[in-house]
Image (cartoon, rainbow, N blue to C red; front, side, top):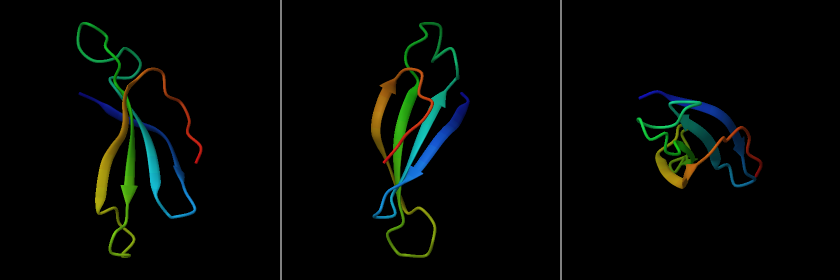
Length: 68
């Protein structure tokens, strides 16, 4: 399964939101179900790398951009 990051943005708090599309542009599997998601990344220890990654939203269609 291919995962393609297609957009990202940062908030004032320093959180990073990444838009990902899986199996872009056809969706997942033979059914073509939605494969897009938004993932939130946070640097919890201040070392400049993401320590936490959670799904913020999932099962989305045709994601192309994001704004904070």
